[in-house]
Length: 341
Length: 281
Image (cartoon, rainbow over all chains, first blue to last red):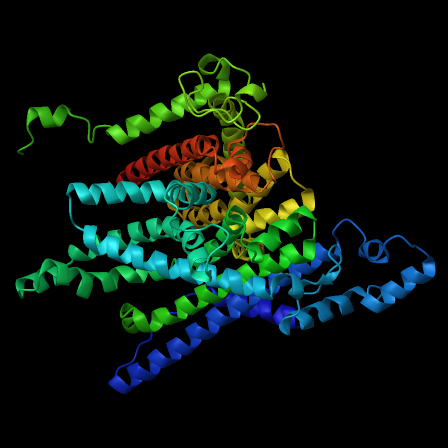
């Protein structure tokens, strides 16, 4: 029941509605708010639909995966009585739709199920200290990437000198690099040759810097290119000429006016960036021997531990869809053009 | 008209040196993939424990690894595997994307809606994580890697083709074709498909770069071609253990991956700009 109404509403949700019209100022304002409410509702509904479908897909994959969880749970001993008891204890003998509903219900409570391969709840494998470690790493990397990208883009936008060219080439190189290679190069230079930073020992912050930069630099390279293009496009607009004519300096013009405009297209990349960070941690944690969600994922793929891998994938999808929906909704307020539609 | 004669005879925009270099490097890779023995006479699998972990020299350009195998030879032979995986998985992704995008674009509203929602759902997972999920089911290996990366990239192409198809099927020449040609399938294949492809070749070129990166990452984790195949990603993961004493055995394969992706990206962007100019004029 829930399913079909969701589908229908989400189906309507992609239809674009006409811009709000009103004759009086008050009429326009209330039309604007109606437009906003409708827009927000549409975005949230379609996000809920996508996540529901992703979860259902995951349930089917777990349910119809090759291999029998009961055999894994019983171990060496196998008797029909034990099999029945295990099935009873884990609810594996219940009808299909009941298992599906309890899976959905558990997920809503943040319970990602049970890993039969590792004989532990999925939450214990992923969401203890591992989640903290990976969250620290990605947060550090996101902040570092944003700072590096904005500074480089503001410094080089609209310039044709040698330094700008070199930085643009650097961005291309870093965006094209495999992150594990970048990690290996950074370890070789900063840990082994210069001896500035330890790889395994050291304080938490010291251990965060190299893996954090490994994640951050490729992202900074991509963001830098997008932001620079935005700044350069904005510098060609009439309002930039007006600002220059009013006597504003070129640097101030860039960070006070153009940067704001260039960050708009960059925010649409937020979901992609956060999702990419999660994937990046899988490789980077392996290179640096850091424990975290990424390393747990690699171990789970090797063990063919489907519930754990799917939990990570679902987490990534939740974050991706959540951030994208948030950005779409924030656009109503941060993009002035959405007010006149 | 103030166009001078020399200007009129010059091509619209000359080929630039970065594109020439990229194409030259890709040509070199093609030789390495097809005829590796022409530029690397040694055997990529030949071990020589007396010469393990030797630094780069005239005899071993890129040094040797911990089993004494020549890193240069292995890197040259690795082009075959890495390019093969990158190109084939892109072909698979584009093929699936075009097929389902086209079906969505020309079908009735329900099918169209269903396929595009399916793209949304698959697209909500980051590409590499989706590929990892598929590998969890299939297990590691070269072909499984190709399938995983190809399927994970399909929605990207599918969305573009679907959007283009929707626009094109309403255009006048398609309506005209529908009147003069009886078969619906014929109209779709002869008139809608070629036009709906649009930017797909450009996207595919850029996609090969990310497919090569993704494949290298997954084989670094051990889910691609298995030992002793000289694939670039798995070479790096072997080299990771000897990093303290031998930087070269991981440095050079990684450098070649980076140069490959840069070349593919530059060529892709060049095509993109040309395509955009063509559609503007």
